[in-house]
Image 1 (cartoon, rainbow, N blue to C red):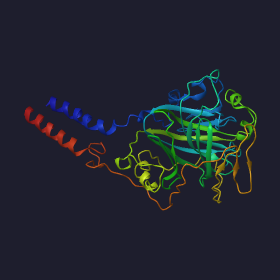
Image 2 (image 1 turned 180 degrees about the vertical axis):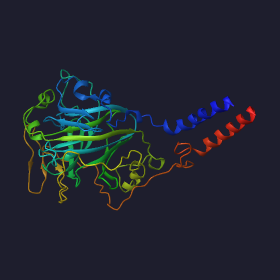
Image 3 (image 1 turned 60 degrees about the horizontal axis):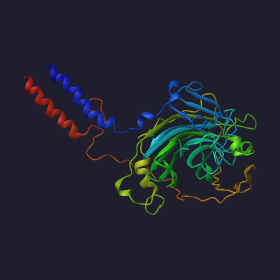
Length: 393
């Protein structure tokens, strides 16, 4: 009977490996419950040898157990200005998800300084140092939450930057915290958001054929554009600005990486074309529960201010001069140096619900503590076990 005892765990392992071992990116994820994981993250200022840390606080599970806290000095991401990025390199298609609570430094509400947000950044690596840096080399996309053009108001900001030409859009968040998600599907980048206890929403779609297979994917935060923009980008990128009005405390509950695969029905289809690919089509495989977390609790030490009731959907038209502060009109339109190009105008219907695909031939019931065991594997296991048992008899 000893051989029978040996074969059962072996076969169970063989059955479990396809189920639990198919996502090669899961090991990159971080729940921020162990301070030792800080060393697993790369920092852009170190990789590119800038020498100046733009974070005043970078705390793994210390200030707030189970959370990463990032508190930036005055710094920004725009055109040639380079801000904070903690990242891991990812090759191929992927999906990343995080839950963020942004606050002002007092912990009482939305940040009070323009463009103070935190979120997911996806960036093309640069093989540079301060000595070899040249303008025009920034390429990235991001989705963040905090306060953008309207200090004191929780907002989302999305930005796409091509050769340091930045185009952004910001809208009111109507929530003081959110789960956000970004997915790469070939040359397409899909940004999603979800307020607590609400459904996933496709926030923006981008097409970036310039971005290479391997990208820097991680967490960004930035604050106090009016101060950061007064510095020449080259100077800004290599100093720690201790003046100004930085006003952001960004808490990340987790950061989860996963492999994602485009359904065969969407192969060769333009994912920017909402007439061909609806938000519901994207949510069917990007808005599922694979990286969900329980409804987050409020920040323990402070009570957030009430969410603003107005529904401003201000878009940014860029016409900014390098050292000037953005100006605003009563219609809440941000003014900069270039014309804003909106990559996707799709607005998801509030009534849309999430769609979850279940793989054919797989059951979700637990068998010996293993969820989703493939019936064919189980039958094979039983047949081999029966044969082994008969041989022992």
